[in-house]
Image 1 (cartoon, rainbow, N blue to C red):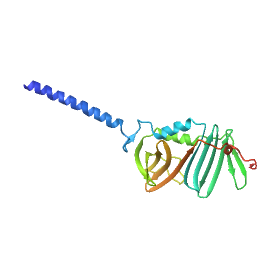
Image 2: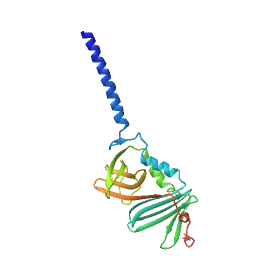
Image 3: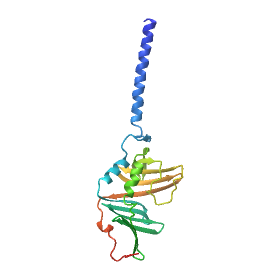
Image 4: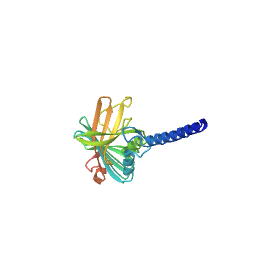
Length: 217
């Protein structure tokens, strides 16, 4: 084989090698995120959950640290009910008719904030804020059971304890069993908060009624 043919063969082999490397490179990045890497191309489970809730007229969403620390949210049409308990203090709100009503059980009093329904869609709004961000995927064992999680470098509103957005190490993990959200963990360095999640599509419509024995302030 003369020198010219050898050069041509080397060039052809280099071209083939570059094509193979290009294919491998594309394959690696198209599957990025399935083994703990950053993923933004595929539809996230958080996005799927948002779409599911968006399609429902009624649903409830509860995050719970324990019996004395929780946030329960229920929505039906243009009405919402919110019950939060933290450090022994409970707050209940009913949002309807464009107004937010604070219920004080101790005095059976209702305080109305007119033309205010800021938290009407609080759960969907929070998921929508997060779902298009980059995230990491991995698995973790909780109570001897493995769950797939999506980790976002952001502080979500799904917390009971006090975390600060200024932290450089803040992360939120959403744990799924299949497509079902079962836990949310907030991580700030060595500080962690793990909340159980319960989502239901059977909502008691009485939640959205201001009790008749409450006095409006």
